[in-house]
Image (cartoon, rainbow over all chains, first blue to last red; front, side, top):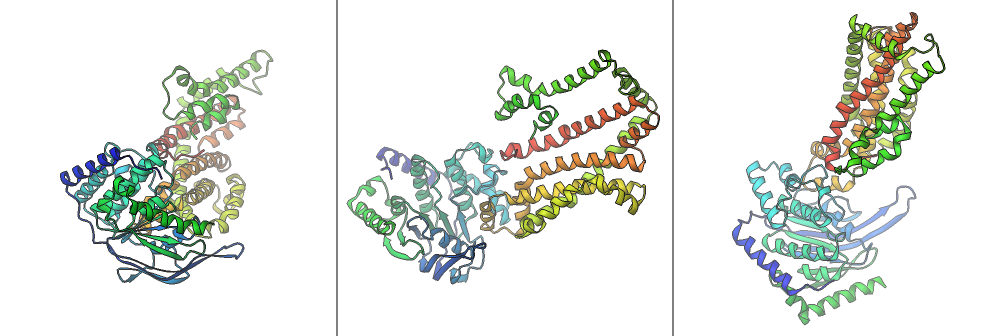
Length: 286
Length: 284
């Protein structure tokens, strides 16, 4: 990953302070607690009958308000894990619970930011961001207030009435992030959301995500194959083995998210951590 | 899709026609203002050929009427009140038939498109009935319903229904699964899913289906009117045959084509412009 320039990061943090004080932060729900017990999943090809094990006995707890990043080689079952927690697939074995309620399908307590573009082309930026709130029948006044807040926070001002095809890739992903946060789920699951944008935009989006995560109390699980990204964002980095995915190691990142700046990233402790995670992941790739 | 009429009318203009479509924003440069009018060219060519056949090769009035005859016949038909009556009858029938086909076809297409085995189970079935055109089932309909309005209506409905069901089904299948996943994880139920994802997502395809449906239905209508004989443009030109009124026949033919162009351009194209074109998701 490209190292951040100190000037840019300083400016972004300044923006953050301004936003935090000048606008009322909408109430965020207390983060949910996710517990995965003995989670395993095998895909069966409907045509050939061939079965591919994707996930192998994963036990993982995400504490309320925690930011967990999951890192591993391509095809290690990271996305399968996320989809099982989201309730989009039913795991072959084991179970997921969110705040002690067993997950049986998708629900508004677990929001997802997808890797591929999942904002709706027929809704404007404003209506995309408001979508979750519309589904929850949040009164119009409150809905507009929340949308306006996240539009401002994600730097989408002036684009509210644009359609997604009129936006750049980075802007579209900002809308997707804003949409999930606006709906205010207890847990937010992110599946390599910045994989498709260019390196420069990716940096900005990471910084924005860090900022938005500090200001809200949702629990976050973020999937990536990028080690720098995993260490920069996570309170803990879960490293997975190659297929079928198992948890290889969990590496805590002992720097509070509030203190993560370029300076902190250049700190020997951070560099060492990144190397450690990189080593773990590379051990799997070879 | 919009250039389809023009391109379909004359392949000679198909090449240059593609250009203005490429620039969606429509650059105000000179040529792009003239290019959309190119659709007139093939019409002018066929009219010129018509005049030439009459004047240079002396094709008799018994085989091909002159332009003057056609204009004369048209004004006569208007004066007698026959033409407005027949046009109204045909337009009413196509409007009713298409409306019914949309009301029945779109929900059925959504149902098939969203069910896991819908396409596998009903794909060939729909293709089969698409091949058995409305004209081919008219004899059967006449046996069932007699020489009645019902026969014409059922023929239009049947003909327009198949492409609408098919296109809706295909449209739903082409919606990225991530859209459904995304709104399901925001807590949406199936009513929301249909309203917010399936209907708008399939709309581009549905509009294509409706355009095809109206086109096929229009043909079935003319054939039905010829056989049933209860007024309408098909009845008019078929009736003119008995009097060998070639002017009336050709006038009717021109009107049949012209009315379809008007329906397509004035009703269906604006719908497309207001929705799928604005969203940047149009097909074709």
